[in-house]
Every structure is written in C-alpha cells, then in structure tokens.
Image: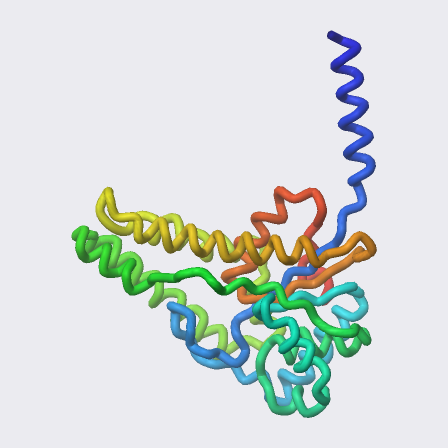
Length: 266
C-alpha cells in the first residue's frame, strides 16, 4: 500500500512538473468605449477620441506590445470571424481616427503594432438575458425588498461609474475595471439578486443567471480551443462583466496564469 501511495505521489509530481509552465493570459476588462447603451446600468460615454486619451492609448498599447501576446482575442461573434478579418484589413489610420470602439482603439491598435495577421473572435451571443421578465417575476412574488435592492444597486453602479468617467483618465478607468476584487460586485448581482427572483416554482432568475454563465463558459471554450501549443502569451479584451466570470474559470484551469494589466503598465 505504501509503495502504491509513493508511486502515485511520484506520478502526480511528474505531471505537475510537466504542466509547470503555464501560458500567460492578459485579461483586460473594459467599459464599452462606444457605449451602445445595451447594459442594464446606464452610464455616460467617456471620450476616448480626445488627444489626451489617444496619447494614453498609444502608451498602453506600447506596454502591451512589450508584454508580447501571441494572439489577441476580442468580444466579436465567433461565427463572424470573416467580418473581423475584413475589419482588420481596413486602413489602420482611418479606423483609429473614426471608430471609438475598444476593439479598434485597444485591440486592433495592439495587434497592428505587433504585426499580427489578425484578431480572434471569441464571443458567443446566442443566449437569453430576460431582465424585464426578472423584474416581473419579482413583482409577481411580492419581492418588494429585492426590487428595491436591485434598483439601489443599479443607481449606485451608475453614480459611481459616472463619477469616475467625469474625473478619471482613461488609464485610471481601465486599471479600476481590472483591479483585483473589482469583479466581486459583478458576479454578486447574479447570485445575491437575480438568482433569488420569483416564487418558489418560478426560475426566471436562475435561468437568467444560468444563461449568463453559459455564455461565458462558451466564450472560454472558444478561447481555449483557439489557444495553440505554441502560444506562450495571449490577450483577451472584453467587457468587464464577462471578464469577472472568465477570471473565475481560469483559476481552475491549469493551462493559464493571469497577468494583471497593472503589472504590464508599470
């Protein structure tokens, strides 16, 4: 028995040694630069096209270039890789001067500086997000306290974000969105509010939460499959709501180790 245990320990040690060199993944959770207004919490638009912000973007992407990701993954439907490829082939100067989208200003700018052949689409957006049904389920269940808690949280998020947008630089905003522990509130809303919604036999809330988890699990699955053996470093740029969950998945995947934006920008 002792011999068997020793053999197993040696095998585990060898396996761990073989997997010791993890791939580095730089995760950048962003607010939406172009702000399409699709999020539940409505916030003001930050001017990323100003001269000051453009200078910051040059500095940020230069630092990321020095980090050296082999691939750049973006929030773009994986079914439309062709569309992303066509976008990438357009004139860089024209795009940077006309399109505030973070996939252009941050991701494409970085990929072009590194002379990458393109970017990689990893978004999966064929899931549901029945927010209005969630509120109706709360009302039907008489969950006035939960409704009020949800309303107050949205107001708090909006006020906090709008204050930062009015006073922070672009670099400060990005660092804030990627601060360790910042993802707690992002995930917390789904479990402390959404999942509780409705009567005992009404799972509208749980459906919304499961759909959000499913979307992000699928995104992570795509990212895993597109990361090849020769890729030592990769970068993902995606909305901060997504990266909050993706960070949790990575913690339990021995393939990757997370590199923080604050360390890249030092």
